[in-house]
Every structure is written in C-alpha cells, then in structure tokens.
Length: 360
Image 1 (cartoon, one colour):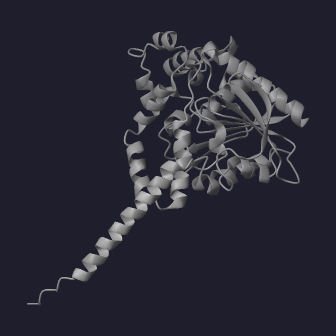
Image 2: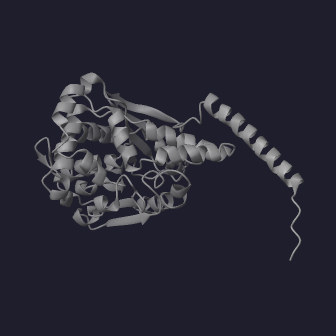
Image 3: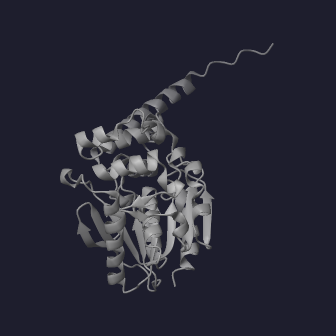
C-alpha cells in the first residue's frame, strides 16, 4: 500500500489568503460599480433635425470623406430608446455606418405624455414616418431614402412601405421583425382576449405602463435577470465585462410606455386578429399588404431570439412582393444580433455589403 499523502497546510493557507483577497477586491469593485454612473451611451455627434411630441429625428454628422448618395433612416422600436445602436466608440452601429460612408438619420422616441394617450397607429405610420422621410429628403437633397427598422420599428416600416409603395423608400432592412403574431407565444398568452381586457386597461391608465411591458419581457426568461446579476458578481473585477453589462442592462430596463390608442390597435389588430400576416391590415382606412412592397429588402433574424422567435418572422420574405429579397439568419439573440461583439463580426459587415451596392 502507498503511504498516505501528507496534508499540505501551507497550500490551505495560501488558498485562504487568495480567497480573502478575492473577496476584498470584489467588494472594492462592487463599491465602484454602485458609486459610478456607467459609460456614456449615444455619444456619436448628431443634430436634432426635427422634434414633435414623442418623436425625435436625428441626423448624425458624417465621418467619411465620401458619402453614399442614398441616405439611411433608422426607425427604432417604440418600446426602447435608440442608443442600443450607438453604445460607445468601437461598439456603435451608428458609428460603423458613418465610417463606411452612409448618411445616417434616426427616428427615435420619447415617452408619450398623458395627454398623448390618443396617439393612434395611423399617427406613427401615416404621419411620423412620412414626415421624417420628407425631412430627410429636404436635408439630404435626395429623393430616395433607405429605411432600417428594428423589431417593432420594422413592423412600422413594413406598414409604411406597403402603403407608400410608390416611393420614396428605395431599400428596406428589417432586424428581428415579427409578422405572424400567433407565434409570439408568451405575448399571445399574456394578451389572450379571453383574459386580457385591453379596453379596461387603457381606459384606466391612459398609456400602457412601462412596468407591464418590462414584466412581459422578463417573463420570457424568468431567471435571466438573477443569472445576469450572479454573472456580474462573479466577474465584477473584469472591467470590460462590467462595462458591457451596464450598457445592455441599462437599455433593457429603459422601457418606454406606449400611447394608449396605439397599444390598443397593436393588441386588437396584430396580437388578436393577426391582420398583418392575414393580409387584412388597414391603417387609417388604407390597406397595408406586404405583397405591395416591391423594393429590395433584407431581413436579419437571430438564431436564438427569445423575443421574436423565428416562427414569428420567417414568413416575411415569402409574403413580400419584391424580387430582390433576402433573409439572413445569424447567431445571437434579439439584442446581440444588432449590438455587441457578435453584431460587429456578423450583422454589420453583411449590412454594409448589401446596402452599399444599393445606395449609389
């Protein structure tokens, strides 16, 4: 028999000291985390081209010596702020587009005030977006405008493009955009007409409270926030990890309320009756059929999107009337598809190549 291995008391002492130092450093970093304000987001230089009510139209200052002829208008989702596409230098989609020679504008949103509860779907599709396109045309001196819609901003862009199908939209890019709302499983259950009295909610609150929107997102991944906080604590001394966590966590919780009548239309027309998918959607009495969109379109979907699952997005390309149309599925989730290291390597170069050929 082998002699028993002698117990290494010295190594125990070293490990205890190492864990003590680790705990001290974690505590110090934790104090720094809670006492600091985090990175400044949305800092790419821009000018407010137009502002009215809940909408803001920005024009980003060029960063390339040569600029493509066709300007780009980004339409953000109405639940979140646009700085997810403009995080920090080196991780900003906006900065990337500018350096690649695109003339970039963004239609971003602020929280609707109580008196703006009467804003309807037609205000967004027949007023806000067309007015922004007109302002972009005037400012750029170009008739054509390419439109990029993120998430529900993609839905609004589709409605706009289908109604104003004779121009001036030259190209359409949609990121993680749903059209079959039956496949938005948790949202469909949350808004089940048998149990969800949207009329009573909106008549009582005026606007859709952001807390309910945030809770519906959290229900998709109930443990995600706790897991994220555990990962933060485990990596609290990793400055790059902490920086990334703070950026994405701030955006994820910075949820906007939705105008009451607008949310009522989303619930009844899209969630309940699935009118966009069924080709029965109208906005302000005007038909909005996807088959009427004839311009080149690129739809980027995420392989692991828990908010807009592929089944909710996969029919978009087949229903669009364009001959020049492409769907690309990339690794990532609903947010990492468009922002962060994953997007820098995958989506951004693909978009640059696709849109560059169609922007002259």
